[in-house]
Image 1: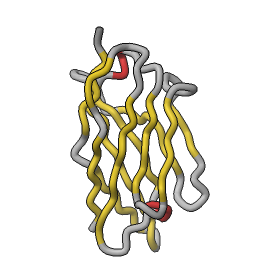
Image 2 (image 1 turned 180 degrees about the vertical axis):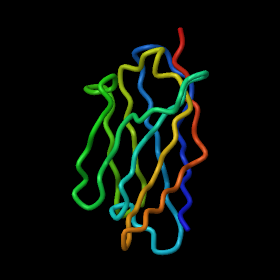
Image 3 (image 1 turned 120 degrees about the horizontal axis):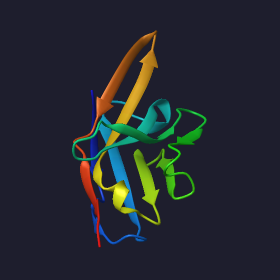
Length: 122
């Protein structure tokens, strides 16, 4: 079993920055073996993918509306994934969730964190 705990959310003005963390724990957990991603959900909207980082090679991908502003990374020793968010906009407001996915012997396991609130306002 894998537990994911997000932290680092908060309130910030437009143009500000926040860094989210997603700490993974559990038996034999190593974030490098998981495809990991950040999702967010704004009030009244569906959950959307923000950024992802692949297992092993650490290839990254971003939603178009965060490219050039957000950076996803991970620390394989600390078992933590990060999301550095710069030049935040009001529309970045929402609950941010981390997700971990692993495929072993064609069986997919996925895990979610409980979410952390990010509020961008004047």
